[in-house]
Amino acid sequence: MNENLSITQPFSGAPVALRARGLRHRFGQTEALRGIDLDVLAGEVLAVMGPSGSGKSTLLHMLAGVLCPDAGTVEYGGKVISDLGEVERSKLRLHEFGFVFQFGQLLPDLSAVDNVSIPLMLSGISRREALRRAREELGRLGLEDHTSKLPGQLSGGQAQRVAVARALATQPRILFADEPTGALDSLSAEQTMQALISVVRQAGASLVIITHDPRTAAYADREVIVRDGSISSGNPVQVTQ
Ligand SMILES: Nc1ncnc2c1ncn2[C@@H]1O[C@H](COP(=O)(O)OP(=O)(O)OP(=O)(O)O)[C@@H](O)[C@H]1O
Ligand SMILES: [Mg+2]
Image 1 (cartoon, rainbow, N blue to C red):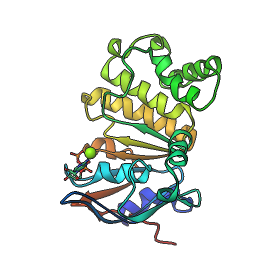
Image 2: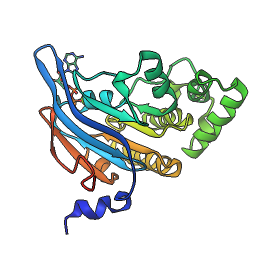
Image 3: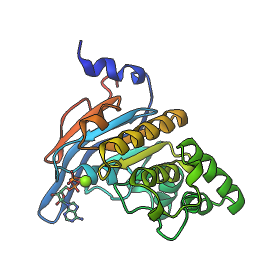
């Protein structure tokens, strides 16, 4: 039996959380995306792999409503994201989606707990409650002893776990991660991935994770490969629909 089938089994009946169809995008002369169809199922971990410059980050930004496609649609919650105004799209990014990048995402002058509490306060939660939830989220990621440290006082792996805590604090339905372990040594990458997967599974959120590392991709339920702006392998859409 196809290995992919057995891997996708737990999600074979899961609803589609995000549906992308016919995504195309150009940066000047560069055709970054050449017509991508992709479903993200509720609760799945989807790895996006492929060579440098193939369009992975562009695709992620488009799925998350950071960039609007030249053509094609991304549907979330019954709405086409690119039809929404900027205000509505930022609300979506704040409340429904979370983001983790390779590095440089924590505010250097704020402690771990303050970094995690910021998106909560932005979404209207009081400072006191935001700090309580931020400590709880950091605890889930094994960082209870590091809450008052500045990013510069944390190891690379700890800092990435703070970034994961911050992304998950607002309880997003979909977490987008662009090479979140790309700057870490293999042990820290492993620990960060384990923590990331565990909290995502607990939350029942979907995770779309770009990675070059097959060991990171091994945590995924499903994998697609982007080459030259198209999906070249994997099952990008649900075949039963
Ligand atoms: N803002 C931009 N302006 C111009 N060209 C861009 C821009 N962003 C991306 N590109 C181009 O679009 C193509 C796809 O870039 P993208 O960043 O999506 O690749 P990637 O697969 O994420 O690569 P990597 O693995 O190196 O991060 C590349 O040729 C890149 O040079
Ligand atoms: Mg990239």
